[in-house]
Image (cartoon, rainbow, N blue to C red):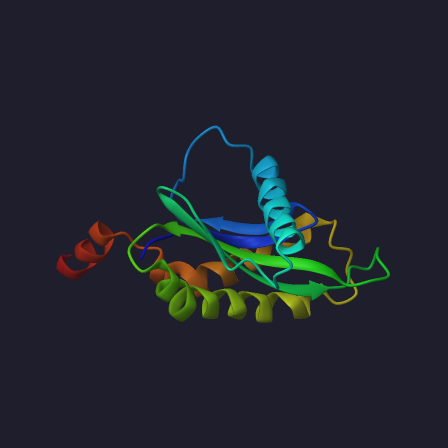
Length: 153
């Protein structure tokens, strides 16, 4: 399992994320964030299911975990999504259930307390949370070569 990126989405924007490895080039982060949020919201509404747990592509899988948060500029709680992009591998459902979802839950558990009384539209205030994301996901962000290199050097 190789984690490529992890972060938090709100209102179609990435509030904070950390990229461990590239997933492609030429993709606008704001467009991608809006698209991911729209896909999750569409799937929830169209299929009357609780939460899309993950989307699987040819090379990558994107896992999600949702919660609600009340921004200072809103009267009602709104959806907040922790996400993780990882390399596709066999038995993804087990990997996501046993490994990734606990990490996403930990991310939300650490992030939600720092949102109290804040307007979430001020994205720059969450930059320091990148260190939390690194701490949570970095052990799973190493490629096989990086793991082997660490053993021998």
